[in-house]
Amino acid sequence: MANAKAKDEVPVGKEVVSIQDRIKNRLANVNNSTSAPASNKVSTNNSVFTLPDGKTSEGPLNCIVLDYMNMNTFYPGAYDANNIQPPACHAVGRDIATLAPPADLATKCADACNGCSNNEFGSAGRGKACKNQMALAILPHDYTADSELLTIKVSPTGIKTWSGYVRMLAEQGLDPIQVVTSISFRQGVSYPTLVFRHIGGNDRLEDVAPFLPEADSVLNAVTS
Image (cartoon, rainbow, N blue to C red; front, side, top):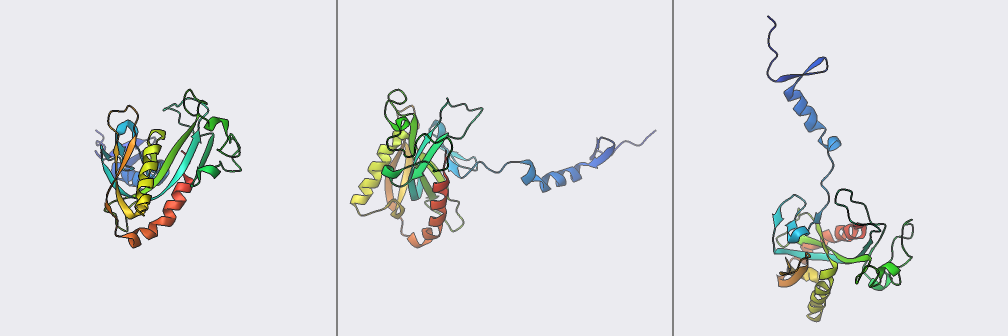
């Protein structure tokens, strides 16, 4: 009678491969066989903060806002969660008046956002066909030199609140980078809408300085 195969071996074609060898091979090829984590974005879907590592929280999210930019995106079709497509036209920048899509973008709707028909109220029902948002680059309020820089988007419904918050700080001679900001969700609304509150000062400005070039780069690269 033939000897039984070892329990840690399985036939693969005409070969017998050790389970342990197979595990080692998979581990060695993780980067080739899986995709990288989606991004450094904090999701606000369903009024829950979902961090890139999958951890969730109902908030508040206490952070340092390193930088922020205006962000416009236009999608010509209806949103399909099973077939997510990049926007046909997008723009990101600091100055609303000069906001414009990349000059070499083949699918851009216009040369500039100001005056584009898709960026006018009424181009999609009572709203705009082009989605106006803010993109924030943030660090945890208790950040260290090894902390991961994150991004979070402020939806159209939250832009007014964000703008009011920034202007309120400016009246006190403060920039968002100088304070600890508490981000939470507005209660009693159907769409995730962020609200912002100043809860303290950031007395570690020298420590955040090394993150600023990355924040600028990350925000300029945001397209969706």
